[in-house]
Length: 96
Image (tube, rainbow, N blue to C red):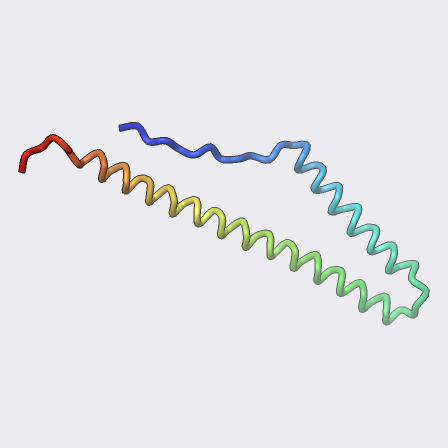
């Protein structure tokens, strides 16, 4: 019995480049806004630390979402393999 493997969606290079450029432009824009903000150094430092915190939190969240999705895909493959094995072992024409 042949098992059907689901097609794994892959991101194109253009999508990855667009996402990277978008991230860089947004981070640089906010950093430039912080630098040119007419406030004293303590406020700038606080905002810069906040920006770094948001960036690292974003990477952590993206990693958690990816890990959960990969875990679900693995458990789905295991469940599919179990079902395929059960169906292959079951003979509907066998007499008890």
